Amino acid sequence: MRIVCPSCEATYDVPDATLGSAARQVRCVRCSTVWQVDPTLEPEDPIEVHPDADLPPPIAIPREVSELAPPFQPMSATHRLPRTLKPSGGMTTVVIAWLLSFAILGAAGWAAVIWRAAIMHAWEPSKRLYQWLGLG
Ligand SMILES: [Zn+2]
Image (tube, rainbow, N blue to C red; front, side, top):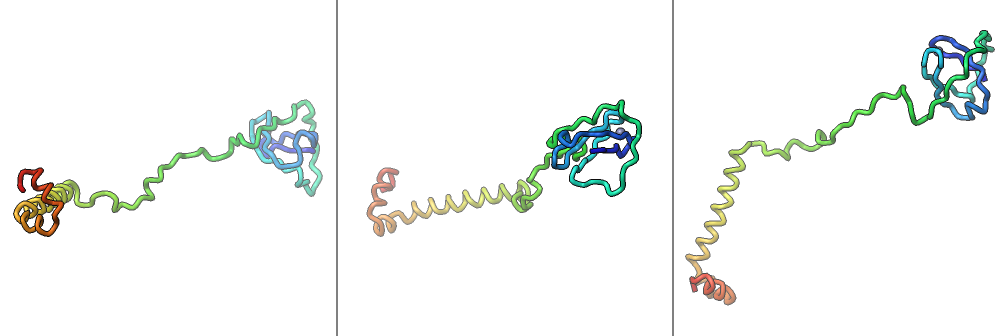
């Protein structure tokens, strides 16, 4: 198959066995241009032959190594997370929430001490806990 470099128009006569049956990339040894060659697509017009017989055939590069592919840019997925995960009110809201939690727990403990007689009367097993705490 005859292929022509799209950049410097160097002409190569490559055996069909070298190219294979599927499209692949080749590199011009004269100007290092890499381009795609599809053996299944034969040119409609005959290519004019240039006397470039002294040039070696182009180097076939592996399909996986594509110098023309754009560089891979790693990207974090954190931008997809909803912004509501962050505390919107800052440290003040967090401190208020903690103080409110302690106040609720303290009020519950204080009520358990104040109304311990009623609690022990309603729930017999709680007597052991109050006795263990020295409040029974
Ligand atoms: Zn070239």
